[in-house]
Length: 266
Ligand SMILES: NC(=O)c1ccc[n+]([C@@H]2O[C@H](COP(=O)([O-])OP(=O)(O)OC[C@H]3O[C@@H](n4cnc5c(N)ncnc54)[C@H](OP(=O)(O)O)[C@@H]3O)[C@@H](O)[C@H]2O)c1
Image (cartoon, rainbow, N blue to C red; front, side, top):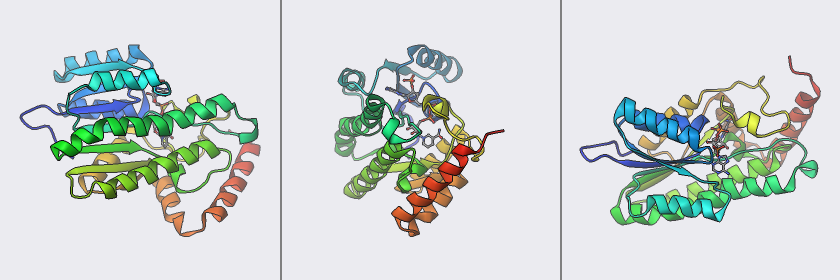
């Protein structure tokens, strides 16, 4: 990853109002980066921008935008304008849990728009400039759910697989260009994600890691030129399980979900 030199570098971080995106923004601001941060909760973004100015003397542009909407994506493109983005962290995303047949169809479609369409659109916005300048990094926050179909999180896992395949392909396309693309695939992380997903959320009995650990793994992976990095033990196990056929893994995960769903949490 390019690190801030004499001229301050600029990062775009989506979903910076909480969780992993906020941890990315905090880490980069503490290292002296200027930021463009994006989310719907503008009050949280403004509070972060004030804090970064006060604590680190860095400049932060807040973009209040719903990335499931065309207008939200246009707002981000407008805020970026001609400013050269050195690092784009495409992180905004949400999931859902429960049987697909009884899921809220409009919410599932919204998830597909945020986790795939917005990622594609924003990557299209920043990559041409990076390629022209011969430098720049793209990080997409995918998930351990990307490694196999996940019954009871069917749409979410499919969107995360999209992100992982997308980044792997881009990384190969970009070889030799000076631009790097990397996907970070965390297992469960202590953020607002579980609450936002509705239903039972993420099961607290599964080991969780911190958002800061995800950021550390992502930046280390990028420095080492990795196209994909896992974060946390659960993700490491899921990644290792790729040797087993996907259909078999989906069947096992489905069975585990059923057992856990029927067993009361303490
Ligand atoms: N937590 C986990 O266990 C886990 C594991 C693996 C991967 N991930 C991935 O990590 C990423 C970040 O999630 P997180 O765990 O940090 O969850 P989080 O705390 O809920 O953060 C999600 C972020 O996305 C933003 N966002 C949600 N909907 C949006 C929309 N329509 N337009 C713009 N921004 C939107 C939220 O901001 P506003 O609500 O203010 O818009 C928030 O800043 C997601 O892509 C998720 O799939 C999470």
